[in-house]
Image (cartoon, rainbow, N blue to C red; front, side, top):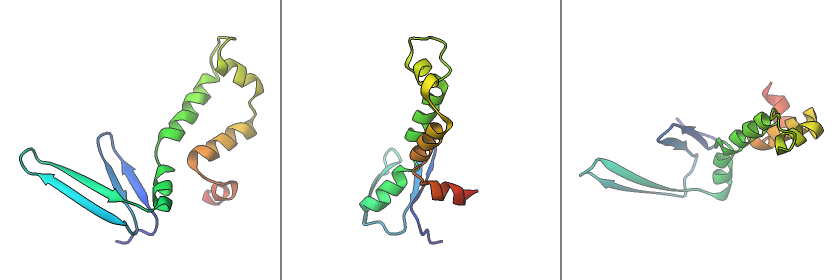
Length: 108
């Protein structure tokens, strides 16, 4: 099965990474303790495509959204809630997903 675009399936303790053309793959196995190491060399474009799938930016967006509900008037979340617009939330979500407006509209 050929994968046209890079993709990653993330689990708590491992990731399955699929790339159309890896530049180089090196493996090291230690049969004594049943561990293996894999070194995957990717193009910058493939790396950036994979990094857009990582949960960090999406997690940061969700933490920020929850912070808007902070009842403390001195908190940053409370202050942000006074000025944030739905357009701002949508733009931040697009950035977290690494998508343009056209790509998001095409997904629906």
